[in-house]
Amino acid sequence: MPDDLAPGEAMSPAISVRNISKTFRRAKAKTGVKAIDDVSFDIKPNTFVSLVGPSGCGKTTMLRMLNGLIHPDSGEILVDGAAPTPGPHMGFVFQSFRLMPWRTIRANVAFTLEVHGVSARECAERADHYLAMVGLRRFAESYPAELSGGMKQRAALARALVGRPRFLLMDEPFANLDAQTREFMQIELAKIWQHHKGVVVLVTHSVDEAVLLSDQIILLNPRPGRVAEILDVDLPHPRYAYDARARPEFAEMRGHLWNRIKDMVANDPESEFFMRDDGASAGKTAGGE
Image (tube, rainbow, N blue to C red):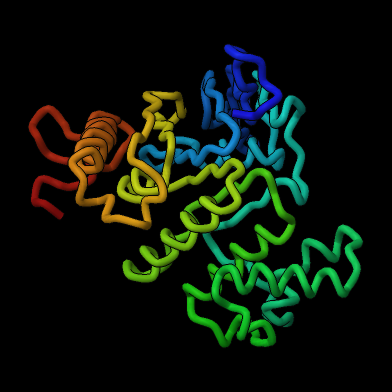
């Protein structure tokens, strides 16, 4: 807790979400698709939070609203007490790498700084610092086509960090990686967060990933997304220093979350895995195809 807080004084949330809803309007259609409905939660400073839930429950929509890329139809989002706006203070890591193929890895990482008028020397120095942090310093002069998928994602992470953001938003950043590379990237992310802190909001479909990395997990219902449950993860940090997955608390929370998501999907009439009264999946024919 900061030293300037009086005894008993509550810490203000870094992010405050109050009763937000969002509907996407279809062209030439009278109705739209409600992605988010009446969602509220707070995120404390220096907290790692994961958004999980069935596909289509509005996780990415929520992340983009936190960044100010899109705006809610109703309700309010406050980031450090003000409406969210994109900028260096708000790093964003996409599911796809989105590296510019004609620029070196150093130039890709430095791009955010360039557009904000940082000098060429400082751009190079800061890019090299964060490339070293993610283990890519010796590939600074390489081009994206020369890197593996895991290396490209590390470069994307360095690009998000180079602005020294207080908030890091990540949309399924490891989804396209093989299982081994994904685990190494989880370790790297945990180390970076442990060292720099700040707020991280991660969208993931992996329950294991959410439990391994998070201080708090926000579970959303199927579309329209509503908060189904907010869980605190009490596993001690740093979790890369021991086998967190082997602890009974990890297995208990992982099982609880997976069972909740499985029940949501099985009982959602719009899901292709919806279980009809006869026990068959709605996404399959009677012949099992």
